[in-house]
Length: 366
Image 1: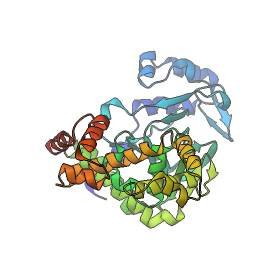
Image 2 (image 1 turned 180 degrees about the horizontal axis):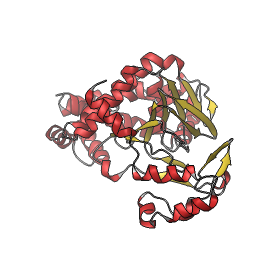
Image 3 (image 1 turned 30 degrees about the horizontal axis):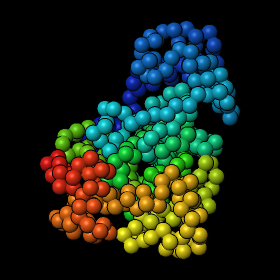
Image 4 (image 1 turned 45 degrees about the vertical axis):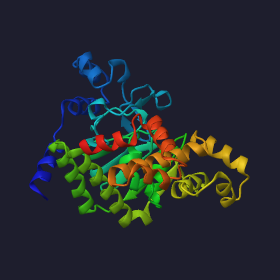
């Protein structure tokens, strides 16, 4: 293992103040009196900084044969949280963090994509109502708006990879257009109005994948003007490599149930692949549906109309071409099926807040 990776592993293994406090809570879980005294030893300001309060950290509850700390008196009354992309990382599309050990369990969802990786040891997560154990080398993909929990009550190290949804269609263009499990996962995460499928991959303690996690952590600490772009490419290589090696063993779950073939997402993937030449009539015919029913189904599943999804694809591909080619604006316009350059410029400016030329200039300047 590289020297930098060894240094990061040592840093990850050290307990921070929050972990030390909650580890002591866990150790005192069977001594109610001592636990109450320990809870009083921490300031309310410190707990607020950790996004907890004294009242929410209750005495132990035994669930599933294991004593744990929960932020409510029983599992049924656990309050849920909706987490937002951290403000300090708004200039990034990807960042990594260690999940705090012994953290009180709480049900939460968030607006971003989450991928957690068991670097050492293991963890337990409840996803869609099903409690699942993960071991060293396990990868779990959780889409936005999917309620879940995380339990790490030992020295295990779990790394969470957070991927911002709002800008994913730009930097994750090649993931969205991939006709595979990853393409389906990210497409559903962007377009499904409800929580979608989770993917679980056992990587068999793959040393190369583990080292790639260390490489991303090293790059994140570098924190220079190149870091963001480098990490975006690192995570894509990591994901494609994991899929190449272990995709045939991947378990796909939807709300805790083994996934069946989802025709709704097949339709969205088909639009993504053929949007430049497709029409709603041809889409409906391809899936043996009535045109009106096909239209209603897309709206019900994604919250968007067929035209809006086509427009999303046009703008996504336009951004990709503006960033990665020297095609002229009129060439991009006609390649995307716009009747005129003026219509393309007007649509792009309405969607992106600036003209295609200004967008290209800003990207290249940055």
